[in-house]
Length: 138
Image (cartoon, rainbow, N blue to C red; front, side, top):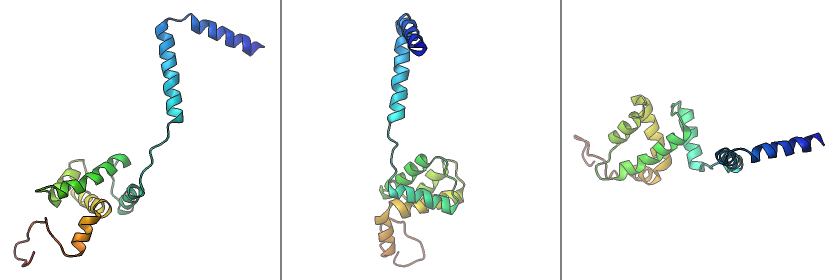
């Protein structure tokens, strides 16, 4: 009985609050409920493998979401006209990585997110890569 009287007292007190206080309270309750029932975003298996490969290689990447976004941006950077590996290294290095870690990160990103580029390299099709002076046929 005491809890019912206490609840009635709280309801009476809430009803006599200014409208802005009631709206702020209701908005806070709705945001709390939305956060409680929100479903977490699911990472793809490739993204999980990418993060695992970075961890195994000892690459410090910061936030996993940022690392996945950066890794996924490497392939379009390489495929556009004038895109090359050095530009990809510089982009990753610009996010605060050392040159060695940037190279490792970019290599892993290409292996995970650019299967067509890896297939071309494996078959010897080096189209789009700059020619190396002194090496015939490339």
